[in-house]
Each structure stands twice: as C-alpha cells, then as structure tokens.
Image (cartoon, rainbow, N blue to C red; front, side, top):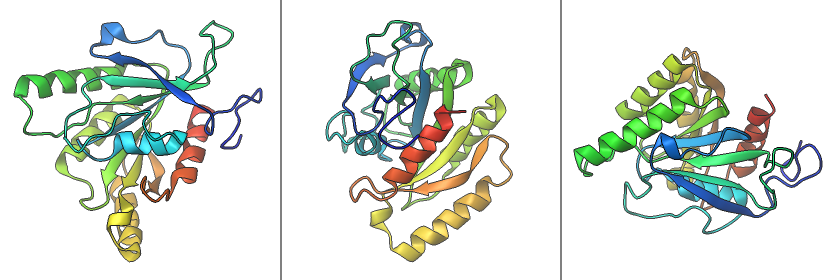
Length: 217
C-alpha cells in the first residue's frame, strides 16, 4: 500500500479529507468502525499543522498560535464514503486536545484530560497514537506522564518530532537518537521516531507510510 491508495484502489492521502465531528465527551463518539489514528501532544506542539500537511490541505484542521484552542476530539475522514457498513472510510484521523497548558482554568484542563485519557483507554478501533514532541524542547515531564499512561493501557504509540526546521540538522539527528534511547524500554512504544517539519514538508511521506502500516496491523 502506498501513499495514494488503500486496498480496493480508493485514495487515502492525496485525496480530499473532511471534518465530520467534534467530540466534547465520550457519549458523542462516533460508532466504532474504521481504524483510528490519534495525535497527542502538548498544547501548541503543531498537531493541527501536521494533520493538514499529512492530507495536503491547508485548513482542514484549525491552527492557532493560542495554546489550548483544540478542546474536543476532532474527527477527520477521507471524503466520498457513504458511511454504510460496506462503504466505511479506511481510517479516521483524530486530533486530540493538547495537554500541559497551565494557563487554562483548572476545571477546563481536567475536563480535557479526562476526555483524552478515557478515549485512549477505551477505544478498540484505535490503532496507534502519534505523540508529538516539539524538537526545540524534547520530551518533557507531562509527555512522560502520557507515555506512561499509554504503556499502562497497552496502547501502541509512536513519537513524532515536530518543528525540526527550527533547529539545525545535527541537533535533529542528536535529538532523534536521544529520543529513541528514552523510549527503548517502554513496552508500548513503536521503536522508531519520525522527524518532521510541517512548514517544510520534511518527514511527511515517512509519517504517511508509518500510518498506513499501523492501520494494516
């Protein structure tokens, strides 16, 4: 399977995607059907920008310089599927609320956190979580907390470095190696790190391939 097609010849990436639902609580989750790929990361790590780069659309996922803007689980699927049992999309991308934004009201942060963690623990169609790490900062304590939760829940995850254009190439290589070493003994971590830049298009093809492999599991 390549970046343009899935089994049956339908396009996957390189085909229009649409937003289908914002989920403020678990009761609003869509019925379990297609494989789901979720994106997690600290507030303002670049999740929305990365999703836009993956699907080749500039404004599918809303981007903002204001941390904490994404407050729901936002679902995106390829356009052109009927939703019938025999014509479901091959996968859904899920943009999760950012974590670690200290300036939001505590009640709001607690609500976002519960939504995200309940989703991670209870969604059987979730194939993999891509945990985004800002290349300028590396893995922080709140990232480690999320990785520990994913390990405990036995949810497969892979780390993605974002904004690598903001640091020099030797630093990207060093950070990639350092990050691999930090996750080496984590039981649910996929043993590879993808270095990306949404702005420059770096690593996007590699991430598409990783996602295709994950949903084929």
